[in-house]
Image (cartoon, rainbow, N blue to C red):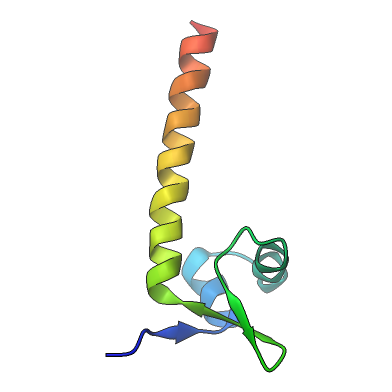
Length: 70
């Protein structure tokens, strides 16, 4: 089965972000995506992994901040 490929609009809906924010994050290499014919495309699996990774990083950063503030 081939991976599900999403457009900028679909990713914006999925992440609850503005389309320009998705474009900027992709362009900066902060969001996993690739260009096809000059248009950004995203694999759903890669985005889901990215979301899990970002949640873990945020959780760890919060723990470090709490220990630092204690």
